[in-house]
Structure formats: structure tokens, C-alpha cells
Image (cartoon, rainbow, N blue to C red; front, side, top):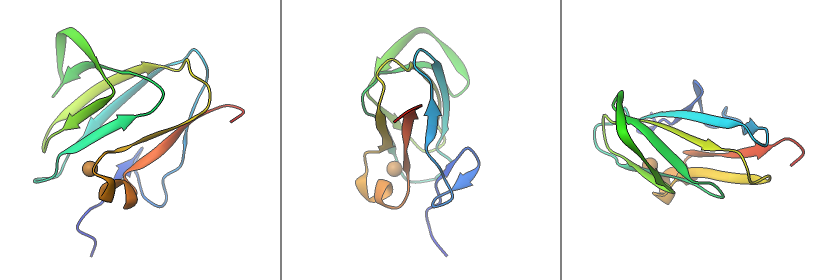
Length: 111
Ligand SMILES: [Cu+2]
């Protein structure tokens, strides 16, 4: 049995797929770290993530990050504006997690 399972939109890798976005779209993400031990520094290329809530609590002053350090039990509500057409990697910066499937591509239509 695999000790690590990574789900995106209810599917575990390798059944996960790219996430399609359209230019100008506001993309919202909810990340949940259900593990008991691992921190997952989630990183998106080509865009900046805005952190709007942590653990279900809206932040009075949302802040921006390229990488969000998701600790065990934490939940982050993030968003970004799709304004950089292309194919952009979204992955855990613990690269052995990314190699095990903890990542995907945000893909604009036509790329
Ligand atoms: Cu990770």
C-alpha cells in the first residue's frame, strides 16, 4: 500500500488531469493537507496566488505568495487571475512528492 495519496478534484494520481483555465478567469483553489506529518509547499508557476482564507477563516488582509506552505491539517483558500496564457506547473516543492504525482498543469485553452 502506498503511504502517500494525492488527490486533485477527487482523483488520485495518475488519474488526475490538467486543469483548464480561460484567460481572464478568476481561478479559486481550496487546498487541504490531510496528512499527519508532511508539509506541502505548493507552488504555481507563472502566476501569483492570493491567500484569502486559512482553515476556513477569511483573512482581514489577504496576502500574495508564489508558494504556500501547507502544514498538516491546514486548509488554504487561494485564487489567481489567469492572465498569463500557456501551460503552468502547479506542484509540491518537496520534489519527491511532485514526482509521486502531487502536481498538475494549469493549461489555457489552445496550449
Ligand atoms: Cu508535498
